[in-house]
Amino acid sequence: MAVSKRQLILEAASSIIMQKGINHLTLEEVAAEAGVSKGGLLYHFSNKDELIKGLNVETIKEYRELVQEALDETGSYTKSFLLATLKQLDKHHNASSSMLAALSTNKEWIKLWDEDYQRFREEMVREEVPFEVGMIVRLVSDGLLYSRLFESDPLHVEEEKKVVRYLLDWIDKEKSV
Image (cartoon, rainbow, N blue to C red):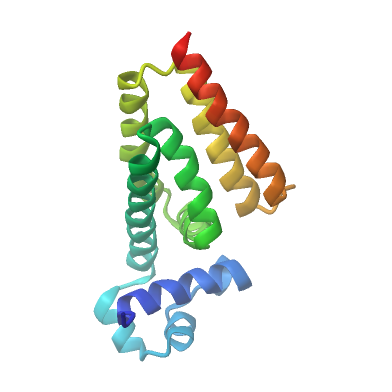
């Protein structure tokens, strides 16, 4: 399947943020990285702020698809939230780059994620996962994301797997209590 110009632009922006830092995220640099003209970039994103919003919207869309895939496998939204976070980290830098860009330029775009956090809370209650367990799962998911984002002692792959296995088992134990 051919990648759209819009997707190429988003991938270029993400790559620049992760490789060079947010200060290098300019429309000119993104256009050059994506192999499009600045006019072509502006057709899709009228300014840098809209580009960053687009990064977050696309990342959220990808995340929701990963949650649905994991939900189809596990039958548990609480588990799917954790598994989707890890899959997104493994597949793309978009989660890290979109959040970093939003934090650095316009914190309003972080609020785009609130709908997913609210759904997590609702599904946690529906699944009868104790509040404390659900919040620990959410905060561990966020912690894994942010430790990679800020390169602050991120866990090795095997360590992540051990933590995730422990949490998945713990969710089941706490639900049956």
